[in-house]
Length: 320
Length: 96
Length: 121
Image (cartoon, rainbow over all chains, first blue to last red; front, side):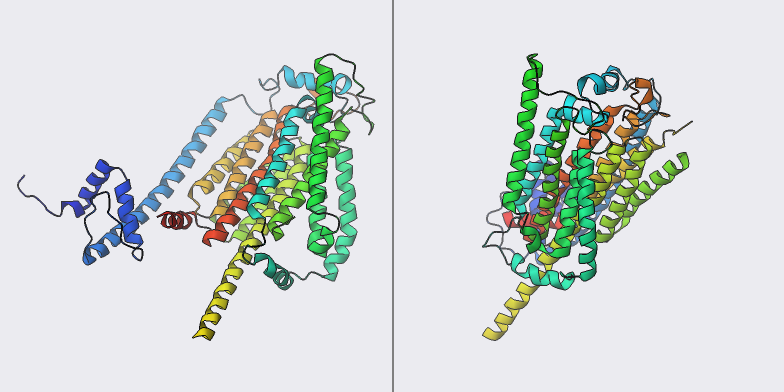
């Protein structure tokens, strides 16, 4: 070589070579060392990072800032290109799929035929075929989903519940709430007094009519949960805590999930062993028909209602 | 019917773009709520009334409420931190 | 006649926008909204696949139980469960966001990563 550069290690090319040789760890370390100047000096660096002179440090800092900016711009461009590419590929694939809204598509095979033609009269007795599907043919799936909601509430409770020793987020919350939103707002309270019974009745209607008309446990439960949330917002946490506490939540959820599991276990057991079952499908179109579906709808609705209220309450005040 | 469908889908996409470009988190949450409402009518047009009811109650209702509650909680944490800092400064001042 | 393929087009674009937000936005709450948007796009696509133009919702009217009268009920059932589960995932992600904010006092994921790395050393 004609000219040996002894500051090779500091140039961009040298750092790139070192990065290639030693993996990205040394570069990371160098960058952190530059960012974190106030911290103590690194004890015995494993890699041979050259000791930074002051003016060189400033240069390094400029370098890393530029590098960081460049990386960010590059990542944004790459992400946009990736997303446009994904959209293009998906659109191309969709163009190759069977066209939209045709009745001879392969998804309309013998399974929906069975659900529609035999569902109401022979298998489930539910006029709403979707309800019959998710609560009878595929009831196991729905049990798992209700448990997902329960587990989600448990996780949020672990993450957000405030203990006694925690910082005083809770102590300040009462006064702060009163500043942000007046607790005894007469307009809100009068409206809520009229609306909450109506919302609750509508939710109960949606749940109980789930096997006859559109609706069911999930939507009805969410509507009733919304009524409870409105009650809490209008009348304050203490009023709602009179009839809905952690104990209520636990009892209602566990009872509903247990009832669901037991009822479906009975139905699976008798069905699989060809035993006579006490569950009859009744006259389709009546409230008390369709075998277990109305009761399972009620169980799912209770679980969803309690879940929605519990999630909001945990986010709002850190406890149930 | 088709025109309504196109309008609703355009509204959904415009809402999505608004969420992508806004910096204000509260505005993003409200626009997301609007998008869910438009989607719930799209479900009705696709002949799935069950989905329409569920989306209106769950997606537009409870999900947005959770977002609002999170934003409020974050602001509460912020003001707590500010108060703590102020209190510490006051204590330092009285001590010195 | 009837609806042409606008629903699937919109579903894919919605998925793409949500995915872009999820990738490039640094704010955790915006990421959460983007995730919910990808969910919506997928549900829209599924429901569009089950639609048959000119037919009615799968609720038996006047005792007609023929395949040729109703749309496919299976995507509706799948999406119904999906919508409710997406709220559960969204709640868990928001709870994690609140926890991170309580610890690091920022919503920017880069700053959180920096602070966490500094803390570890």
